[in-house]
Length: 50
Image (cartoon, rainbow, N blue to C red; front, side):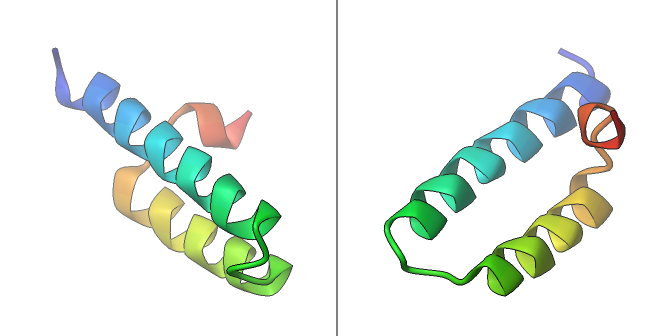
């Protein structure tokens, strides 16, 4: 598996966790957006730009 595919998988995994944390009230929407932006910067997923 190439690094682009791995980055997509890692990013999607973090989005899944973030959604669970947000829905359970463990993080705020502002925190969600901040963490998501950091993950996009780190993993550079192609899907996030769609």
